[in-house]
Structure formats: C-alpha cells, structure tokens
Amino acid sequence: MDARASHAEMHALTRDGRRVAPALLDWYDVHARSLPWRAPVGANAPDPYRVWLSEVMLQQTTVAAVIPYFERFTTRWPTVQALAEAPEDEVMAAWAGLGYYSRARRLVECARVVAECGCFPQDEAGLRALPGLGAYTAAAVAAIAFGQRAVVVDANVERVVARLFAIGEPLPAARAAIREATDSITPDTRCGDFAQAMMDLGSGICTVRAPKCLLCPLADFCAARRQGSAEAYPVKPPKAAKPRRKGHALWITRGQEVWLVRRPAKGMLGGMRALPDDGWTARVDGSGAPQGIWRELGQVTHVFTHATLDLAVLAGDAVPEGDGEWWPVAQLDAAGLPTLYARAAAIALAQGE
Image (tube, rainbow, N blue to C red; front, side, top):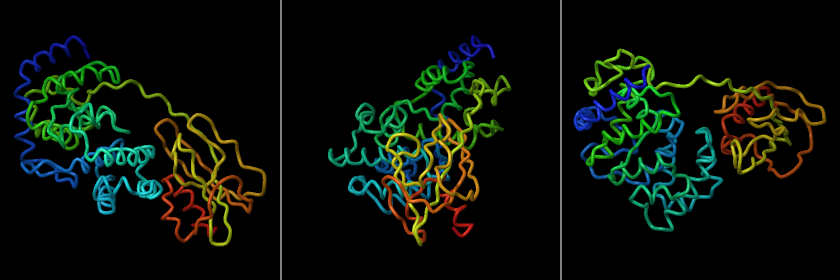
C-alpha cells in the first residue's frame, strides 16, 4: 500500500470530515446496542461508576464475556462507595476468569480514591490521574459519562479509522496517525454517543474479517472501500512467535482440603489464590517437580499474551512449605482461582484426588 496515497485519502476525508459524525450518529440512533452499562439514546447521562467499571472490564475482553461479570458486580456492589468498602480478596475472587488480574487490584484502589473524593472527576485529565485509568479509559469515561469531547480509540475504533482513511503505516507506528484522524472526525456534541457508535460500528459492521460494507453508514466516505481492500487495514506487522513455557502445579491435600497459596502481587495472575507451582513465568520455565513422590494427573495448556504455558498437574503427599491456607475442596469455586488453576484443579478432581 502506498503511504503517499493514504495521506492523500486522509486529507480528502479530513476536508469532508464534518459529514462523518452526522451520518454515524443517525445510524446509531437506530442501531445502538442495548448493553447493561449504557443509557438508552436520548436518556439522561449514564452512571459514571457503571461506565468506568464496564470500560475496565472490557479491556482485552469481549462484551459477551463481560456482561455476566458486570451484572454480578453491580448487583453485589451497586455503587463506587460499596466497591470501595469491599475486601480486596472478595473483589479478586469475583473477578476470577476475566483475566489481566492486575485490573481487579487497581479497580479497588481507584474505587477507594473516588469514594474518598466523593465523585469521579469529570474531565479527561482528572480521570487520567486515577489509579488504573490509562489514556483510553479516561477518554472513554470523559466522553460517555460526562459528555466531554475526547478522542476515544479502542481496537474497534482503530480498525474503523484505519480503513476510513486508508492509513497504510503498520501498527503500532500507525497509532499516532489513527488518533489524529479520529480527532478530525470527532464532533463537539454527542461525544459519548459518537464514541459508542464507533465501537458498535467496529463490533458489528466494520469487523476484522468480511466487513459488511454494504450496510455501513460510512461507506461513501471510506477510502479502503474505494480501494476494494478494507480487510487489508489496519496494517499489522508480522507476528512474533510466542515462546512456549513449561511448569508444574501441585495438588496437595489433607482430608477434604487442598493447599492454596497467594501469588505475588506483581507478576502474572498477581494477588490471586492458586495452587502452588514451580515458579514458571512468561520468561522462563519452572524449576521442575520438587523432591518427593508425585503422580502426574494431566496437563493444562494456557495461552497468555506473551507466552504459551504447558502446566503439568502433580499430586502428592508432601508437607506444604511457605505461606498458604487449607481450603475446603467442596468450596473450591469460592476461592476465585484464575482460569489456569481452576482447570488444573478440575483435572485433579476428575481423577478423584
């Protein structure tokens, strides 16, 4: 793809950019998704707490996966004050299965800061200063909850704008140009609706594969469509091969109880309860099975962002070392084990261990 042609397309669309937002918002007024954290089109502004919570949950996660977690959280902790008062252990357990567990710790930290202040900041800079709010989340909350003009760029918006302007520079270097292009079409009014409309367009119409260009309200403005190459954007660099790591998880029981440990606060699955293991990380293999007599019960393969892990599950009668707790096997679901260790436990339980 010719980068010079992409820039020419970009300038042409920028000149006509004032037509993009009205066309998109007209479509959104009819086709907006109904989601539990959204206020209906034309209704009063949504609850900032619900907007913030949903945006944190949606990072690196699908809408379908988030909805049941969001509904359980808001039933159990209906306000930011209620979440601020919740024990961190309970929040971490409720988060189990959503992944990226550092988000849950920052969630509680942020809720406590907001509760102490009495409300969420209403501007992007103030939101950006809260624990756990990056540039995207601060912009999204500012626009959706408070109607502030903010440039909101998530993965869906990134794809829509890269195609709309035919930005030929590969990611991640293209992100500056994508942000600039998004800024050029972001309106001064209905900012939250515009941000959510862009997300909906990317989710349901301007999809990664087989985009539905004939249904797109922005088809007449789309440079990639005119080129006949929508799926070519955004341009992605070659994927680096993920390293494959090996580790061992230990199933140590005492009667009807199993030994659980708390993972270090920093690092993968930080702060979560888990089965003891041999110290595997995304960078290095584990140290191997500890001394003693162990039976291998099976193996779990789990894909993380930076590595694939093959985790062997071992059972034995060892005496636990270090800090931990005996947990009733019958209540293991309440321990809030992350998915990797929940699957490892399921292997042990399936074999009657």
